[in-house]
Image (cartoon, rainbow, N blue to C red; front, side):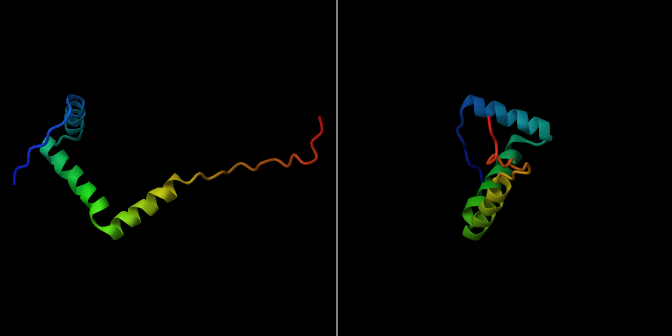
Amino acid sequence: MAIGVRMAAAMEERLNAVAKRLGKSRSACIREAIDHDLLRHGDGDEARRQSEHIAQLEQTHWSEQVPNWSDWTA
């Protein structure tokens, strides 16, 4: 099935650059992007799993200990 998509010129330029870098056609890149988006948002369980995974990756992990300044004097 063929579907037409309108996009801004800047988006088309980015699509062309990505397709060239990956060695794929623009259509293949668009199909993969749609498939990825449908997997991410189409199935409630999968969307929730991916959202939780992304949230875990974005959590800040502090490895440096904060000094105890309670006895600090100037």
